[in-house]
Image (cartoon, rainbow, N blue to C red; front, side, top):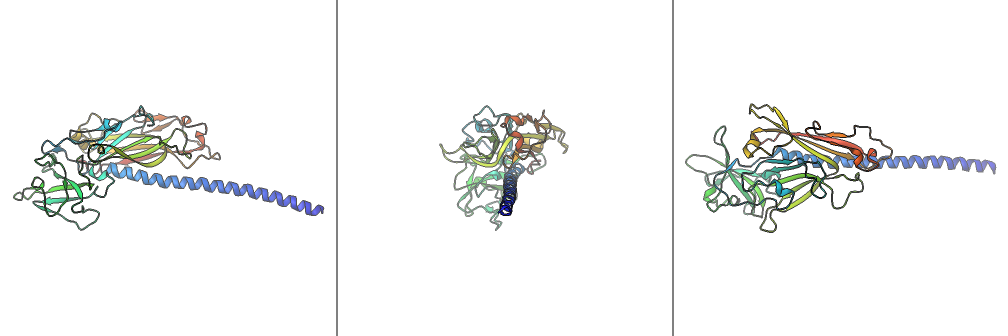
Length: 363
């Protein structure tokens, strides 16, 4: 009997040890799964941001061929503070703090990108060229707009080095036209005698555009329902599309959450101020640059995003710098104190993601 009791006690001890090991293993696997999932979702969101910045200015004219009808951009704050209407649209706009607006993260940047390609509809990113009355068909579903459905803008490209591309506007003031291969408004037909070509860029499907471009805004704010897996006080990186449409619907923004558990975003720009092809200045404010100067001088966009991977892990202690410099320097970015994100801030895996993008449509 004594031997049996001893064996039972020993077996109980072993089972208890195994149970603790199993719990530690499950906890570790859960933490790792959370980190991997977070990394995957973050990679997708950042790749969309990278692609949009790369396409900034693609299909965006340097000037209007004639005065266009009034176009409508964002109709609510803070987005409407970045409107270009009724002037020639700037490919990039930026503000270094919209924290005064409810739920937006203080000292975090707001980035605006304009280009037909940044839209979320099926026509966005498609393009072709027009010679006289002929619209070129690529026979490629990724490039060809859909006959009778998609709307496009038409641009007269630069004719010489240093020239300007022009947005073609019809006699009625229309700056967009439905893609119909059988007929084409005369205003959007280049001269057959000179052999010139116009470029056509898809903007919207099924809806007549209220802007001669698509617009995507990127910012960090706290969602309506906080994610319990994120550190308190962090937010979500959103891509917001300024929508086309008739009065009452056009100008509203439609949000797409991209990256969760974000503490801050900073954007800086590398400029070529003497136009020799080599960036010579780093700035965190381009609000003083007009549309053409943005295209001429902005050679590189640097984006810094502070967030954490996975969920809180009491078995992990953050050993990095605190406060964290988000940006190339405090002067060009901001300093973020992680202790502001709850009493368990040091049990999150904090990380700064850096994107360095060269807009491919600029000079």
